[in-house]
Image: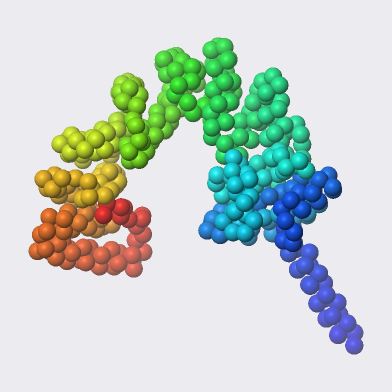
Length: 412
């Protein structure tokens, strides 16, 4: 009897322990969004709104690994009215329209007051620790996103406020407002302030605008500021911004949108002034982007051969292979028939130096596509046999423990 009582006591203890460590955020499923908002207003709480989709990986990570942590569950259940909606189903479709200005990525986590105003926002799937730190800010009018915006707009431009505000905008994934606020703040600052390490660190993290007066000043005074903060740090900031512009140029060309040729020329001129590897890589990209998307296939061929045969700035055979394959996506659909032989030449040049098996497979596959476009069935078959042989070699190497990076398929 005594043994049975001990066993029963232990069983109950294990059950209670399991229950105590298996709590999760209590999301309301019954009732409408407006009803839950009314409840939040009545209880003088914020509404926590998890906007997700069924296909969003980070959303699933939050639901599985963050919302189920006891400390998170206890805090949210005590302080918020919690709701979650799939933005592509049911009421979520209308809520996506209602909060269109707030929801443009997933997961988006909104903290809403009883008036329906968003006072704080987090985008993404932070760790448990970061999620709790960011969420607690929602309850502090001095540190919530809305509160920081109000302080800044009312003239509080202290370093603490601007740092917290820009960080909050970053956590909210609000690139446009981050750009506007950072530009306004730094452009109003005396240039002598740029010598302060804490100011330059803030600029490095949040100023993404090559048209900003501050950016142009740093570009023009690159050498002097490099002596203060370190040339590598200053150049890294400048190249990072110029790289974003090159990406924008690429998107404009690929999307067949108007291209600012004046800005394109400005980028080339300034990148040439750096004379370093990163700038050189961007110049190669610009040459390939511009000629390829203008349909100047002779210039594209020259730029590609230069990239493949030059020692730098793109170093390493596999890096050159990746670059070639990246810039020849949909090549067979776009290039005139007379330039298909150029593509075979690029692949052959790379096959002389790139012995990495996955690269060889990709280059042979690229050649097969070109031969197929040319209508050369014999060479298609011959190349296909070579690909089969390389795949067997790759499989044998993998059995022996060799691992390979992902393949560069994208040129079909």
